[in-house]
Length: 524
Image (cartoon, rainbow, N blue to C red; front, top):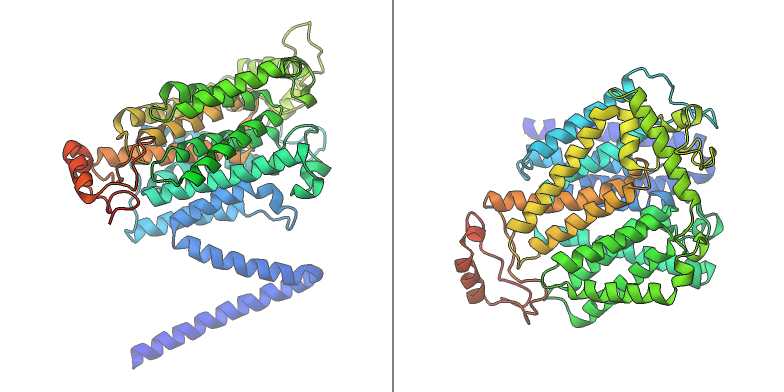
């Protein structure tokens, strides 16, 4: 009886605290935003409910971070506060709770994770250390949000990599990421095509057509053609990957092929050379490495070459708004920025000019690549090359740490392509998709500093972590995946006897793992 009374009293105190907090929140909203109090309360209630669910499920929390990053710009149409940051911290807390309750295992930590940790620390030290130039916008005079640089370009992608290794451990979890990517790419393709060929009312958010950051280019929901090109390129890859799965219905397979074509065309509509180059590179990688599903890449390559040949005059012109790639002004911008970056590295080789300070440096210390280039090209803007921007702001040690991360992640992905089974959804074909995601990051980083673009920085590391997690579990004997090679065309899945025979032929996959749950779709 006393135990029940104690619980009741504790519950009563907790209810009183919750009620008091609710009253304070309502009164605060009523005073600060009386016209929006209803919308804010409704949104807060939904956010609180989703947050509680996410705290109990790190997979859901990770997917919310993925979605919140995609929707960060459209969200501003409704409220000024953004959801990405609280979703990120909820994801970290959710994984910590799951590990503490032994519902999840911490992912295997190795050289990659230690390099990531050191790189994060180096960025934070750069924020704290004194530098020659203050983090003040030279044009607006406002203080630069240095922490946002670290959060978007360093903390978010690297932490997501580790969380993805931990929670994307089943076919169902991986499929969530794949289908959400397809949904994002489908919507991005829709607004990109409608921007050029449809009515304005069919495009949302409205800023895509009313106030685009880059006129005449497919900016997508990000209002940024490079990031739009990245999700479209990954959507193209994931559509072809999922269409190769033997258990997929024929009508869905045809739909994915059609969507892949729409994504590829939408990449062209970005009129962005880095995005086009990334698409060309992944098509080439697919032709070379996509065993059992390379035919789609070959067809895509042939159709792409035919399209360029039919539209060669426009494609190679200097008219960017029409899709020409021959414009030289942007090249001159980047050459001058590269010269300024190299000057910064030469003057500050160890600690750099300071995180988030390149725009300031490029205003007061701007230089030219050669005397043939106009001095004003590239003046007073942020770095437009990822690695040189890192070298300028963080010095040579910062650059070496970043390159070490890229090299070790690529090596892990390469080992996954060599070691994982060929005929499972979580096997070598998925490893190729993860490798393509990182290639998209590197190629686009040649012309853009991706550290301020959270989705562009985070998505490739999400896919890389998803793949490397499978490799770790495979090596530890905890790899569980249902057989079924991409492109094998197995009708109706495998019977239990066929699954057993497959495991007899592949004893390593069976070691330490459970028997597959009835084989593929259609098996009892």
